[in-house]
Amino acid sequence: MSLPRVDRPELPEYMTWEELEQLPEEIAAQIELWDGRVVWVRRGPAEHQVFTNRLWAALEQHTREVNRTTPDQCWRVTTETNVFLGENGKIDFLTPDFLVHRCLGSPYQDIRAADTLLVGEVLSPSNTQSDMESKKARYAGAGIPWYWEITLAREESAIATIRAYALETRPGELPPGVRPLHPANYLMAGEWTRADSTGIRISFPFPIAIDWSALEF
Image (cartoon, rainbow, N blue to C red; front, side, top):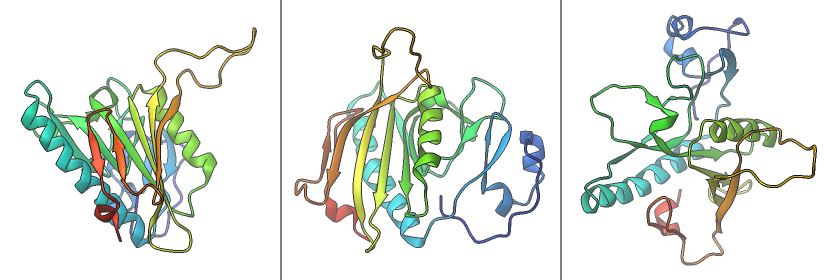
């Protein structure tokens, strides 16, 4: 998420949603709650916002086509919107850079993990691998079927890699007595770089075809 530069105030380690709502918008927008724990979101460069918008526009074209041709499906694409991980309550949420969710019955409803088909994160050079692995594990634990990860190039304003991950539907086999650290996991289902001249092509969760020219800075 790309956010304006605002000094971070001293806050308690844990907060409620109601307490978060009392903060100035420019502060609250930089915070996620992980089971009530305050987690600050890293700021990104201008490229981060541009490429988030490029992915949104590309996916928007595809969801509109699905909505038009498949009447029993209705999807929406948005950016930087809170996804609440529990069935109720608001003390556990993440804010992906872009997401695809089912059409909701009325305006201004909260988006829950159960409504969400795909979440995506645009990784700037300042993002650490440990930060993103923790966030990815939370998405998986909430049962969100698809996770996309976009890595930006370090030496130019461009996307280096796009990876699509599918949620593992059954646990993998481990040696006797070994238990996984997380109950759910994503497995890589697609990976693309600019060396792939045909662009991004994948059939799931619905047919997606994105040319690299649509993702230029």
